[in-house]
Image (cartoon, rainbow, N blue to C red):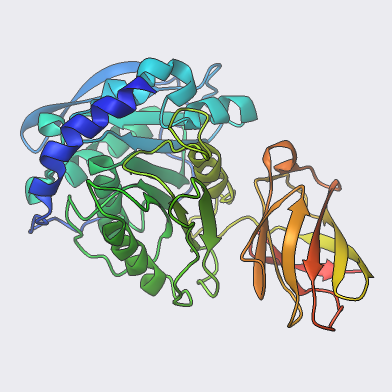
Length: 416
């Protein structure tokens, strides 16, 4: 992916020069209204796809807006902010660079379109192609863009997200700190505290992605950002598993114990400073990061002003076949709710002494204790009344009992 190589040149020179956080950032939240529907719902759209100029903090600032095809003024849309990296531009995020549509908004636009559920994307332009956020002006820009979008478009104000790479990751972290009551979740790709952290005490759903061998913004910086929200979200502190150097793989870990509706996910990979690592080496739009971030964002389906993940009402049946030192388990998950599930995580607790050695139709992490099984590409959707089947093989030390405490997207499942 050609543009990734250009990122490294510009970021390596400048990123470490901006590690001092700005002070004096205004912590007042954007005025997003008291109900889920924005003021623009029900009216002809006041904005169209393309470049826009806005006055913010006494300056002319710009952003690029991308509306879904067949925009419906009566449909409340999810809104995703995509922040560019140091030396990048809003156009790079919107256009996808050399990978075009496939990598537009870090690959999320392609996934949104294929899901058919409608998402509005916006890419602000940083001053000097960066996000120094001096005096909080970039957070204020985000507030101003939000007000303009909500006045002219139909947006679900409980479904506002942000993500960005490197300096853009730092900007997304700044919003997590100062606008936790506005943004539902953020995804930080290879970030650090580059744009400040005014506030930083409220919970927000948080996903961090970082490379073990990142020589621009070391992985310890990303771990530090993550740990802010491990604490804020009430998660159980842990040292999540990470891949070994030389493995060219990745490990995704969902923290346990987090406050309902405020998960923390950490995705570490054996690679350098890139938002698009590919297992086995290299980077490109075929990366796993797009799917993981999309799954993380789309788990939040509620339009309640105080949102939690959509109740994943479910029923689980499981069958164990055991032998001397091993067993297989087949699990069927049925959506007993009234709304479709788009992207799912099934959490359960294995009996002591059991360790998963292989699995199918889901990814499993960790392999013992409290395990999270996440959907794969072909089974991410579960319609009301529909079921998916997954399974795994495990070793055991004598206890061949069934798993317990099943939850789907945070909601308890009935076991039959």
